[in-house]
Length: 185
Ligand SMILES: Nc1ncnc2c1ncn2[C@@H]1O[C@H](COP(=O)(O)OP(=O)(O)OP(=O)(O)O)[C@@H](O)[C@H]1O
Ligand SMILES: [Mg+2]
Image 1 (cartoon, rainbow, N blue to C red):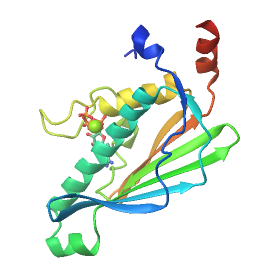
Image 2: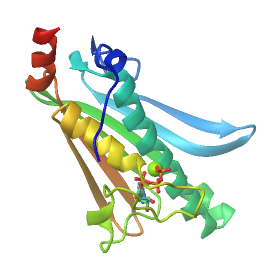
Image 3: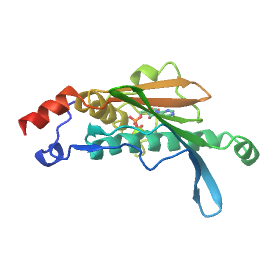
Image 4: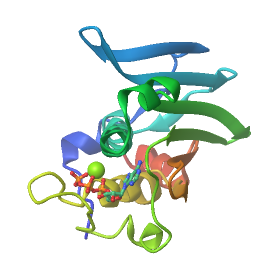
């Protein structure tokens, strides 16, 4: 499967600070009075600006977050309201600078996690465990391509079944391929 960007999308490359507005905060996502998900955001220091495709990366983070929400909803089916109150559904977003030219964004949830038997297939095209009509199995495939091919970064999943899943995006601040495209413009 090929990730093809239109000319307009190619020109949408920007130097931006990812996750800038997030400080050490904690928020709840809710509908009315019912708190659905506890969102914990943690920035380990200010991230330097990264040369990237913000629209494409936004799609990656939205795919990972919507999967996390689905996983939490699934986990809730097996829990009583009291259990949910004692161990609230949580999504943790951590960002940090790992080296001079590399940043890491980790998005973790305390849903049911991914069984060992399928963890190697998560990024495969059309792989889904969701009902027909709910999942197409392309969210992570596209995200993987955006991170690895377009930004020369890495996308990995760590999970312990029953305890949740963590998706880690590692991005170079300046990918060679991206720099090359700038030179050519
Ligand atoms: N946070 C998570 N916790 C548990 N399983 C997950 C998580 N994220 C992804 N998965 C598993 O990986 C599969 C593939 O995810 P992917 O986003 O590619 O497709 P999808 O969510 O099923 O469909 P869509 O194309 O609508 O995104 C999911 O069906 C689910 O089984
Ligand atoms: Mg998905």
